[in-house]
Image 1 (cartoon, rainbow, N blue to C red):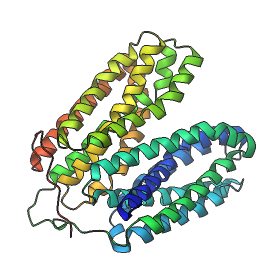
Image 2: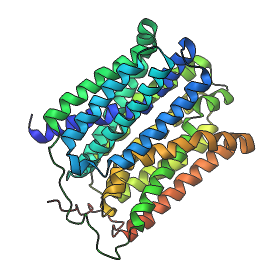
Image 3: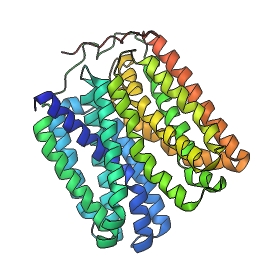
Image 4: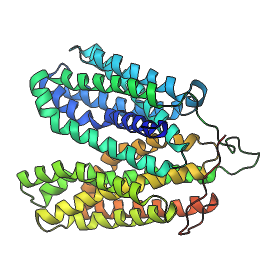
Length: 386
C-alpha cells in the first residue's frame, strides 16, 4: 500500500473515531441512566457539555494543526482519548464527568486534524466521502455491539471500546499522517479580500445539518405518530444507518465529474423534498424509504459541501472547522424541532425542515458565486499547495 493510500486509511480511522464521540452518546446515556452512577439530569447536562466542547475544540484546534504538525497533533489527540475514556470507565461521578469532558477535547482535536489533512489533497472530495463512510460504519458497529458490550461490562464497556479506538488512532496516525501540513499559496488573504463567501458557506452547512436534524432526532416520534408497528420501526432504524453509507460511496464514485456545486445542489434538492413525504408516509415501506433517503442524501452532500467550503475559504480555517458547524447545526435541532411539533405538528416540522434546507441551498449558490465558483458541469479548479 503506497503512502497516499495509507494516508486515506488514517484519515478514515481518525474521522470515524472523532465522530464516535458524539455518535456513542445515545448509547452511554441509556447505559448510565440505567446503571448509574449519574442521575438522568446529570447525564443530560454532561452530554450537552460534551457536544459543546467537541464543537469548540474543533474550531480552536484547526488553527493549531499546521503549527504542531498533523502527525504529532493526531497522536496527542489519540492519547487524550485513551486516557480520558480509561478515566471515564471508573464508576464514580467525578471520574466519569472528567473523562467524558476530556474525551471531547481529544475527539474535537482529532476531527480538526483529519479534516485539515483531507482538504489539502487534490482528491479532497473523494477522501471526505470515504471518511464519511468509515464514520457511519463505526457508528453502525457500535450500535450493533452495544447491547452485548453493555450487557457484559456495563457502561465501562463502551468507554473501553473507545480506549481501543484511541490506540488504533495512535498507530494509524504514526504510520499514515504527514509530519507537516501543506500550505496553500492563498492562505494569507490580501487586504480587502472578502471573507463573506466562507462565512456564508459555513452558515449554509450548519443550516443543512439543522434542517435534516429537525426530522432525524424526532424520527421515532414521527414513526409512532404514523402508527408504524414498534418492531417495524426498530427494523427501519437498524437498517437506515448502514444504508446511509450508500450516499457517501456514491459521492466517492461520482467524484467531481460535474464539479462540486451541481452535485451538492442535487443532493440538497433531494434532501429538501424528502421530509413532506416522510411525515405522510403510508405504511412501513414508505416510511423506511423516506427515512433512508434522509440520511443517504445528507451523506452524499457532505463531501461536496466541505470541499466547496474549502475552495471559497482563502484561509482554510472555516473549512477545517467544518465538523464544528455540522455539530452546531445538529445541536440546535432538538430544541427547534420540539417547538415546531408543539406549534404546527409534523407537517409544520417537515415544512420548516424543507425551507431551511432550501434556504441553505440558495446560500450555497450565493457563497459560491461570491467565491468565484461558477455553476458549471466542469470540475472546479483545485487550489495550489506548496
